[in-house]
Length: 387
Image (cartoon, rainbow, N blue to C red):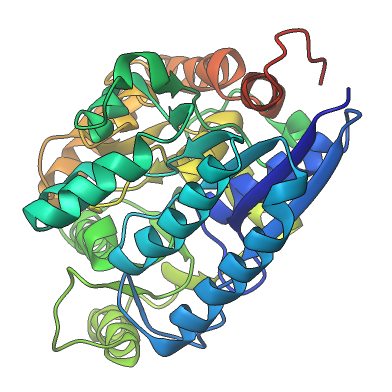
C-alpha cells in the first residue's frame, strides 16, 4: 500500500476521553498494515479547567497543531482528522481543512461525539455559512451511528459524504476473561459501576442519589464504584468548580454514612478497570451530556457482559436496547435508575439473558477489529484491508 496518510487527533496523554482513546486505537491499528503514516496529536496541556471553554493554553495547543499540519499536509495524500464542536476547535479545524483542500488532498473528518448540530445552531448566520463551506470541502464525514446522521444536516451533498462507523473497543482491555454474569447471592453485595468523567450532565449525582435511596429505602445491599476524573463543561453551573464538585460529592456520601458502599476510585485503566468491569452487575451512565455520541464506556461494559442502564440520548439507543441488554431512561430521575435495577433483580434467568445479549451485541457491532476495518478501509479507500 502506497498511501501517504496524515492522522490528526486528540492525545490521551493529558486527558483521557472517548475521542483520544479512539484515536490511540486507530494509530495502533495502522501499525498492522503497510502504509506511509504521519501522526499529529492535538494536545490539551491545561492542568484543569472547563471543557469547551476558552483558554490561552488551548490557543497555544491549537496553533501548535496547525503549524505541524501546514508542514506535513503538502507531502500527504489523505488527511484524516477528529473534529471539534467548539468555536476555537472549529477555527483550528477550518485552517487545516482549507489548507488540505487547497493542496487537493482527500479529506476525511470524524465526529467522535454528538454535539455538532447544537454547536452549529448556536452560531451567527455568517459563522454558520463558514461552517457549511468548510465542512463541504471534505470527501467524507464519519459519525458514530445512524441516530447521529442529523448532526450534519446542513452540509452540502451530505447524503454522499456521510459514513456511519460505530465506535469499537480500545486497546487496553483483555476481554477474553468476559463471561455471562449472574446476580449475586443473598450474602453478597450488588455492584454498580459508573465509569466516565464525573460531569454533572453525565448524571453521576443522579446515580449517587439513587444509590443512597436503594440502600436506605429499599434495603438493598450494594456497592457503587465511581471511576473517572471530576470535570466541568461550559453548560454546567457557572458558580461551581472542580474542587466544589468533589467536596459536594464526598460530603453527601459522608452525611449518610455510606463511605464503605459508595467508593470513588479516580481514573482507572488496565487491570484495575478490567476488575471493575468483571465485578459489576450493572453499568450505570444516566447521561444527557450535550456532546455525547456513543460512549466507549458502554462498549466496555457490553464487552464484559454487564447490563447497562443509560438514557434515550444521542447514539446510546443503538448501543443499549431497552429490555434486551439493559434498560434506558427517559429522563434524569433517580427513581428511573431504581426502577431499572429492581426490574433487573426480579429474575436471575432474565438477568443472565441481559448479560448474554450484552456480549452478543458487542461482538456483532463494537469489536476493535470490526471498527478498525471499517475506518481504515474508508481512510485508505480500500475495502480489502485486513486487520
